[in-house]
Image 1 (cartoon, rainbow, N blue to C red):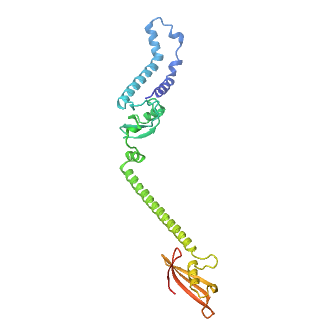
Image 2 (cartoon, one colour; image 1 turned 30 degrees about the vertical axis):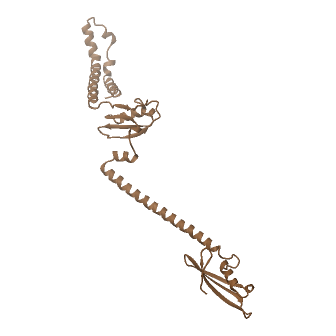
Image 3 (tube, rainbow, N blue to C red; image 1 turned 180 degrees about the horizontal axis):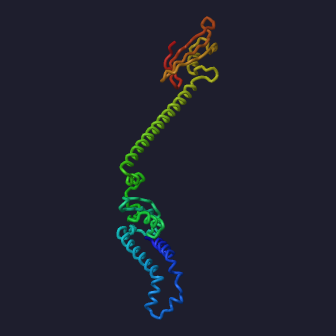
Length: 275
């Protein structure tokens, strides 16, 4: 029982005994010549109050002694080669006792002094627990996951494990989505580059294939009579199939319509002329 509680009980008893405080006549108290009679009168009016007070103190002392024997004060140990009050190292707070296995908390040295508010409050919250402060680098690895698993019950560990599996699965799916997105982006970029390369093979004026048109003109009887009609192509993957329709004067002087189909490389070179 703490001292404030003792004082509270004593106050209640004191009020309960007020009839003995205000009843006596002071002249009557000191009118007896015999000391024994004076003592009897004093005990008659005040003895019960003081006897009750001392009984309360005696009982409280017995309870306090028994409590201290059953629940010894927490032992605060500071294990460090450096001065904990001046070092900038983060320390780990380890609690071991009847109700707590281990708890690790990163704290600055100023918060871990044996007389610090933090440690004092912790000692009050866990009266049967020893508090050990040790330099962080004394431990190989202390992670959040380690702390959670160290304190968790078996049922909680199962839930933690299941949650971790779900998070791992989400992470796996997320990584696959990123890979697929990167793959699609690469394909798109390659296709754009390919289309740009193909586009350079054709004239921006009339859409004719530049190198194929040059070959056609070179093979005509009257190159000056060349008139482009239309050009189309089919993308065959590694090459193009280009078809050009044009007009030209033949050996008899007449204008005729001709068609040339050729296999062309993506760079614009003629690989083969079909007709």
